[in-house]
Length: 344
Image 1 (tube, helix red, strand yellow):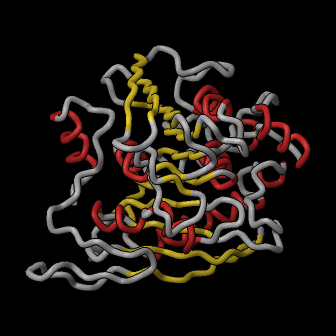
Image 2: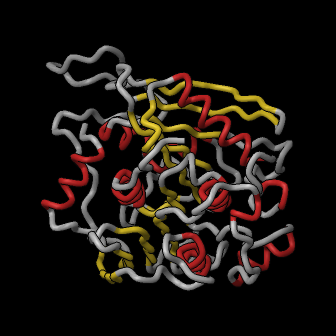
């Protein structure tokens, strides 16, 4: 398992290849989501990996969550990723489809999966489109942030490397979390989601999903969030998505990424466009926005021929497309290349 600095050095030696994936130890085990796994013979491990149950409660409400703890965890601070599932999904389903637990075991990090309830949304969608769930310290953002902080208190977590990501409604809520808690999360991963405050009720949410958000977002600084709300973000979207219009992916970059100006893509950065093809699968276009040190501050992946599904996902989970580029690996690469200079 490499530290953040080692991962960055690895990227430098590789010429900052935008298609590189997080390094995987040669002896890394292959785990099934939700099933504890041990290191291979010959490797000393203090414990097997675990997929634990948890419940968090605060004034804003309560939610259950699952927590993956890798077998390498031994009290030394590790990164943490919060993964927010989509509608009609569960933490277990989302973990299986993304194979994030396997990737986390190889890279050495913890992953938490908060669970939406049918009582809060009958489709089990995160309520990213409601005003009370778009503000710091209120509603679902307060609950998700509370889960994050609870895990940081109970486990040795590197406060500089805490991230949030999600799919569809979960991806949209990940954007909300990044904008309202930029002091807590160092970067955001979004798959098939919508921009922050791209809707303010169910009707405008349907319009935004079908045609792209048209509501001018309110800066997070106006909803009691700390200064500098923009965060590094990586966005995946299927070009043939009929559930969430693919224009929404570009809008997330235009409104959320560092150096974005009034709905325009990041300014004062180098733009690199790369086109590729998965063997036997989909073609894709990757647009990266690089800072002065040529580190990506934002990436947009448009997967041609793919619909509303996690790119490169596993068939054992719902809403996945195994023919696309590996969204799990690419998100980990991007997220782990960013860290807070000071923890929350």
